[in-house]
Length: 418
Image 1 (tube, rainbow, N blue to C red):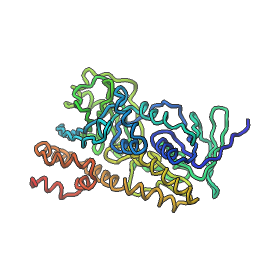
Image 2: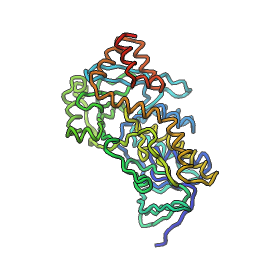
Image 3: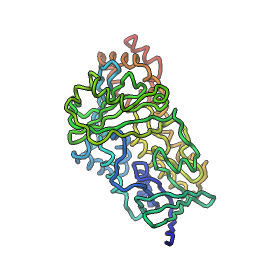
Image 4: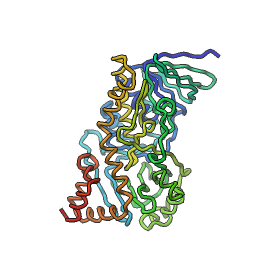
């Protein structure tokens, strides 16, 4: 069979939030591109299913009406107004998110299954500026001085697509990263997560706060309970890969033990029903200034290891990196420069100006969370002090305030009641 050949301006491998974000912003700029997706949408993706204000920002900047649409579809998207931290001693600390000030948006963030949210984005991709191939199997990526060529199959058809630049948006096992960056992320920079869907959990916050339970036995990881529409909840647990290996932890057993025996958790699952299976996935954790580009390629989302080391947030960072990747591609095409130095200045540096401090602070908080007594101390104090509680709340939107959490002086002031 004859090989189909395509020439375009950019190639995107992967159609999840990172690839979708890149494509949507390329379309907005009138840049032609090809999307190569391994699966068929709608498809599931194992995740915590929480979308932060960063997700809202990226969508709002592109199409404000989409967010208004999302918040109006209550059977698929659930507005979230805050977060509950539960210290190792079992004491909760409710932290409301800052109020939404955008007309038509009922909350700063929301939850939705990845089956729903990813498909919502994917359905909005088709345009005159792109070609989309689903159930496509990448066979070869060749990079040379003239560009990048990807050979893939779709059914019995073999297709070759050529472009000046390629975007890896193909997750933590990214073929683009492995072939072009030659960087296989070490266990020390990865975490493992499990996710399950339960129906009928009691005691959820009336404003749909997401819950992080810092169980002593899995620190510096945590267990989560994220409310979803239709009486469902995403329940999961995550921990560093190196800790699983060093302590020989069976993560599934830890999660089920907490559900069945933890005094703060198990009563809420008394009549809850598990839907489907408990599934796992890898979380490539972000670090300040890790390379996310090179000659003729850019890495976005999990392919660029951009998961927040403390919160585990990946969706917002994936969309944000896709938005900036589109900006970098536009600049590269305008200047006809696709070398590593140009793309580093056009993509890596803007990305880390926004995410660098956040990742650095989150990595420090991850290390601090190894100490149960410290969590207990802060939560106990915040429970008795409205001003401290408000300060911690503001830290989720103000990086300068959040940076205080990693400084010993912050805890000394709490100790001295200042």
